[in-house]
Amino acid sequence: MKILVCIKTIPDTSNAKIDPKTNNLIREGIKTIINPSDLCGLKFALNIKKQVEEDVEISVLTMGPPSAETFLRDCIQMGADEAYLLEGIEFKGSDTLATSYALAEAAKSIADFDIIFTGDQTMDGDTGQVGPQIAENLKMNQVTYVSDIKYADGEYEVKRNYGTGVETVRLNTPFLVTSLKDSVNKPSKFALGREEIAKEKEIHDLTCKSLGLDLDKVGQKGSKTIVKNVEAPHSMEKGIEINEGSAEKNVEKIIEILKENKALV
Image 1 (cartoon, rainbow, N blue to C red):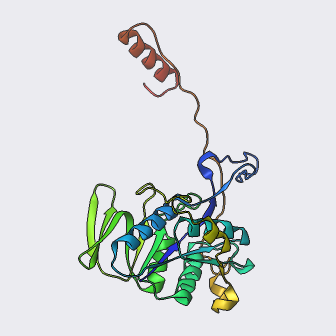
Image 2: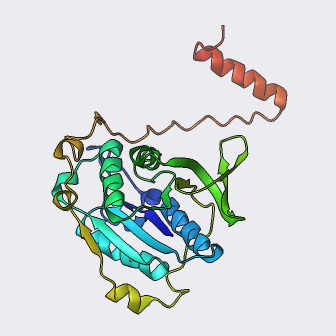
Image 3: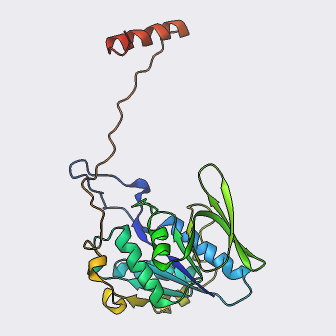
């Protein structure tokens, strides 16, 4: 059985700031991390490896710069078996359409995967589009926003959140799952004692040329999304605190303020 986990390295935007003059992300002091919901996908894959009664090979795939190799080795240390890095200047500026095309073609070149895991969305782009688009490119069934997945009696039981409740889906392979952030504990780098394995493991390099990709479908050429402007949210003005000593006087003060601002006639 073969499982693929797609990961993305992103700036940790939990404490990010926007330059008010340029409206660009201030990257100084921001560390790079693996997108959290992608790690949930890896944990789901590791759980399945324990549940099924057959040999399971887990591969991780990312599209990014050479520095992403460090994070692929982290995934090997967490329990993945193989790692693939898709990189090249041709992919610069890729939107979700171009990214999903490249990742789907990379996946096809590696193996016929039984299950593919992605995160539900990334903290930097936050679109939630790449996983479903990969599934469409590969003509695979897909289950999105998954909070749990288990193997039992020859099929998979998947729980997906759809806003107001949880839907239970039962299906057979092949299929793609997008994993919800915080749906499961992230895998530990240190629980399995695989530090030396991770250091020595070969990271397989994939390029636009080696995959024979259509250059009109990758990078900015293959991207249909146009970002016209990025700006920080406008800060709200501080409200007025009213404390006139009683509820009646507070109401009178509110009415007075509303009239002054011509909000009440």
